[in-house]
Length: 385
Image (cartoon, rainbow, N blue to C red):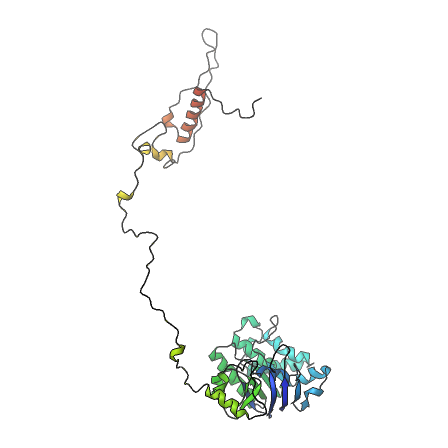
């Protein structure tokens, strides 16, 4: 099914190879976990399997084909027999669940009748039978990953590659995804999965290939995640001697993890600085439990409501309880009939009781009277000619 023969892959700008002389073979129907720290070479293996990258040395055979002999024109036809599941789902946001799954079949030229039959079947298999018309943004993370899995297996591929399919999911949702992948494998599909999910690897007890710094340090059937996978990758200048036995590298890695997990030594404890100089911040405002009349400032005598001036009392000055509309003075009644002497009497304005008028009217009349008495006329405003 898959065979790597002394495969080496080195990326530009890196001082060490991503894969260094890797050899392994995966049989049809197997479920294989690729484990190791970030940067150990797991994703590089998957990219080489789908011919997304080319090795610098060695040969790769997938599904009986030598990938080195496949031309670029034939790569899409080769990938029709593969299913790929990514960590970030890679769904089409403007298409429904049904259309996302059907898109794979449309690209390879399947008929409309085949699509209408195959898509509902695979959605039912992954537990999304009632959500065919939903859009990706209407689904949870676990449901989106199920759509991605349905899209990968709708064409019934012989090989399914999964790169961290549970990396963005919570433990409960991840357990459902792993159970689904196990059911797919039970149907005869070969699965190769790169993962950091140690608990699922330990629980499922499948074949485990462990990579450290681009080299295989462990290849065991019915195994668990192991202790060495939790180690950081080997530095850029440090490599494992490929001519020697890999056992020495694995033993060195195991020795670094002999200390039981969860125990922190004294040297690793954070330093605690003790001090007795506790500074209590001074409150900005003093707390007052009760407001007394002593705290109320005195009202100046000029504003004493007991004194009545020509403007009325204080409450009326500020417009309180003054709901009466403004009243205008009636025009004075002129005497049309001449006097007995035959000469008209001078016109006079009627006397008005100011106390009966509203405040605003009294203010206006008083202002007019003051202007008349002082002889100032503020109406003529402008430059002096």
